[in-house]
Image (tube, rainbow, N blue to C red; front, side):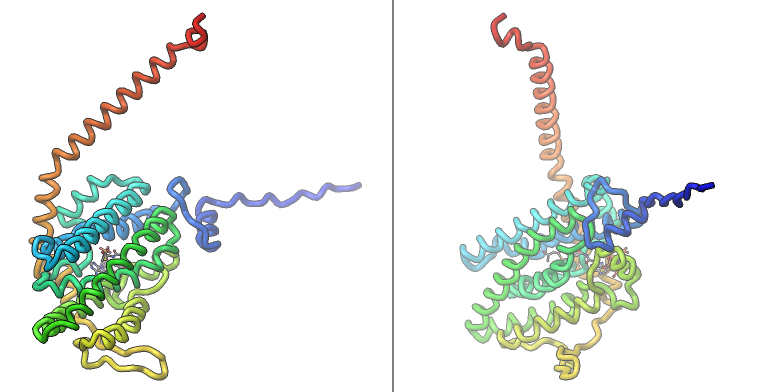
Length: 337
Ligand code: 3HC
């Protein structure tokens, strides 16, 4: 007697297994795909913080728009601030694909329930700060954000491609402004050095706490949201920036900065982590002012949102009427029958 071999039923891939397989294959998770709740929550947290940083980040430099030293500098600064508004917009749109609403995210920012980058809580005291923000802050942003173009979540990764291109322009305009100042008077060179002294350590803190104190890194890396740890990116930034500082002729305010032959990179001192903690928790020099200004701008913009919603509703109603008319307008009528 021949007995038919019964094939073992192949277990259907669970949603979780499919998700893990997409991540492992370096493919992208898209908005309609199943994803673990914690992956979604991590992305919403990071993308929202990133979007808020872009929007709040317009304030420190916006402070100088009316006092730019020439029409050319004003046009450049205005273009940069407008780029940042655009970055905020792409990022809020990317967050919305995860099922949150932009209005809800703004509300969370204003009420202190969501964060934005520590770097934007420092004051801009002179025009050299505009150059140093471009060089160091946008330079750090590029270092942190280029790997995000390979993030596993499609809409965030795609938004980052354009953002990084524009950040590159921001970084170059900052460096060019500083080169111009360094070719100027002794007072201008002192102004640049003073700005570098104030912005260096806060720029290093932008990368987040050291790896041992970063609760989110391991999981975000496993999900390929983050591609490098905070310390790896901070080191990369220092290695990239030291030669630029030398070329510019400024001194970075770190007595421990020295070339490590063995590693082929620069060793540097430890940022003051207690300062980062204070700034993240609202006690930086400008936190209250930044949030207050954001709240006022949001309230002042209420009429624009209302007008835009009313216009969208009118367009929808018109489109609805047109569709109903078209349904009544039969092909016989068309042929004059
Ligand atoms: N400022 C404020 N909060 C910070 C921070 C900083 N510099 N660094 C870390 N934190 C927060 C984290 O958000 C986290 O808090 P949470 O759990 O409540 O969200 C906590 O400190 C612990 O940090 P982790 O390292 O565990 O957090 P992450 O894994 O999320 O890493 C990050 C932090 C490196 C900033 C990461 O979120 C990231 O790469 N974000 C995307 C880039 C970004 O947001 N950049 C904003 C600044 S630059 C910019 O956008 C404007 C440009 O024009 C200059």
